[in-house]
Structures are given as structure tokens and as C-alpha cells.
Length: 115
Image (cartoon, rainbow, N blue to C red; front, side, top):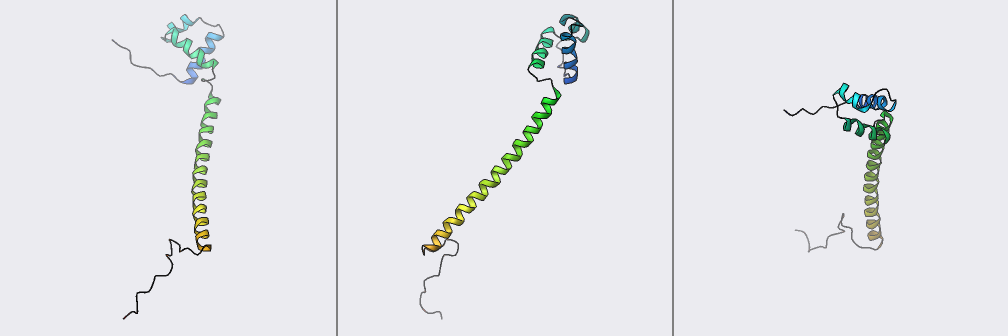
């Protein structure tokens, strides 16, 4: 019968890794005590050394993601403003050159007298 997948908190993983690193218990003894695979504990050790089991790293990542979202929003806003200003400049040049503007279309040619 297959075991269902279990999820462990970052705090628990860090606790197990610190017990291994502190040489309080061997990896095999901890695996038996917590009903884990020794290879899983080894994977957690690698993650710990890479900084993935650190709460501050997670908080920093969330702060960076929020900052990225804010900057992307600002880039979008500035892009829209830039496009608007380009269109205004183009319309201004057309007006200076005497070409009719698309917006106003200029005066319509007369077709004779209105009756």
C-alpha cells in the first residue's frame, strides 16, 4: 500500500537538519524517529546549506516580488504616458505644418449653398 504524501513545515525541516548538524543524532536514527527517509534528510541538509530553509530568505523573496510588481506597474504607466506624449507631439507637428488633424478633420469643403 502506497503512503500518502506528507508535507513538513520549514521549521520542522530546519529542526531535523540542525539535529544532524549538531551531531545529536545520526541521520539514520533521525529517519527512524521521525519516520523519514535518510535521503530526504540529506536533501533538506542541501537546502539548508543553500539558504532555502531560512525564514528571512523567504521574507526577502516576498518583498522582492512585491517590489518587482510595483516596478512593472510603473513601467506600464510610463509606457502609456510616453505613447500619449508621442501622439500629442505628432498632432502638434501636423497642426504646425498646416495638415488637417485627424481629430478635427479640418473644415469640410462646401458643396454649394444650403437650401
